[in-house]
Length: 455
Ligand SMILES: Cc1cc2nc3c(=O)[nH]c(=O)nc-3n(C[C@H](O)[C@H](O)[C@H](O)COP(=O)(O)OP(=O)(O)OC[C@H]3O[C@@H](n4cnc5c(N)ncnc54)[C@H](O)[C@@H]3O)c2cc1C
Image 1: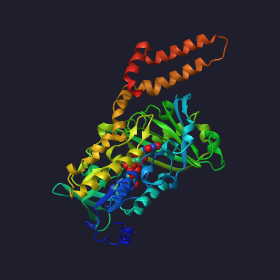
Image 2: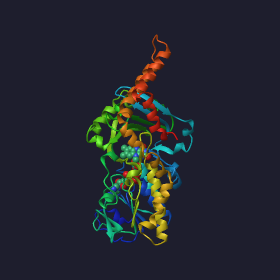
Image 3: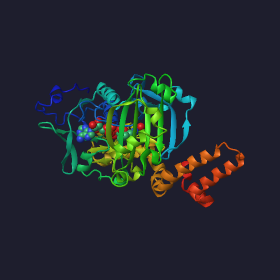
Image 4: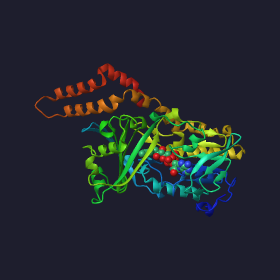
């Protein structure tokens, strides 16, 4: 079943030979969800072609980022993968314009394999490596080719149109794994264009330390392959916007960035680049980045509409996976899309293999995909946090403005050294926190509203 890379397809100038109906499935996009789907289908014995617009898989991919690998580990030998560092510490910092109040989690267990299945990676390296594993399993990869639309016959999706000469490719199944900027799926009415409230704009820089070889180890207190994931929220991170900032350590660079709602970028916080620059100069952040030089700057959107925004996943002749299907958990505490992308690709691929066995391509025959995904952590996690973003939106001034200020004031007061007794400081600190949340009644209301965070 294995196919060699068609040389003619690899050369953009050459007229594309007729590959119509040579493949069982076309995968649009060789990102995480696309390669996971292609690899799984190839393992199931299907002939698969992945179409990727980038020069190589990952060339155009932007993320924070921490790659979460529980499902990947079942597909490939993760120890062979181009990983940067495992995450040994997670730190959550609330920032006012000049204070930080932080919580750090650094369990000893994370130093041992499988390192909580959390690793920083460069997507350019990882995605290329992962796509190679799909090719090794028998899939065909075509790069520098953009899918422009879907081909339909009598309502059924029967292939894709590409930007190559004679660029139409027919196959019984199409997997839409094109990521959050899903122009093909939207163009084919497989999903609506997202509201601005349901999309975050993200900007990210990769910073290197040209004059300091041990900057990362020293400043983030790391040794060996250990790494850190720092998350920030509050006005010191993203101004008035709904969102947060991050710093992740790679081998010898750091990724620093932020993401906030597109609706805020259109109104109260219109300059993501300027917001990132301000974040980088915050007194709690600047010392971590001192002397760093920007090696790369990227911007992208993140779908964050949650379960409500997940479109129909199956169609006659097609499935939608990963970010294209809105399968991202981004709630301030968890930013997870990589694991969901891979998991959804695997479920979709198995459903296609099963439908192919029965010689069926209709949406009903592919229902195993949404059904099994519903039982998986992907949909369960999205459902668990369905309510959270709405609640935080209602409390946004409290969560992003008043609480970080109150925690900073309370901390300052609680640890104040003067000639007053500690009792006085503790009372003042408590008073300040209660004031922020609207007294005991307000605290009870918040506890009730957010009780589901702690089951
Ligand atoms: C700034 C930022 C930070 C993030 N941080 C994290 C993090 O720390 N951890 C985490 O788990 N998740 C994170 N995410 C989310 C994560 O990156 C995504 O959930 C994940 O990449 C989704 O994978 P995917 O395969 O569905 O889509 P993508 O990774 O976007 O891949 C889509 C692929 O399709 C290709 N493509 C698109 N359109 C076409 C077309 N028409 N024709 C051909 N090819 C096409 C693209 O070039 C790309 O290779 C972050 C996202 C952003 C933007």
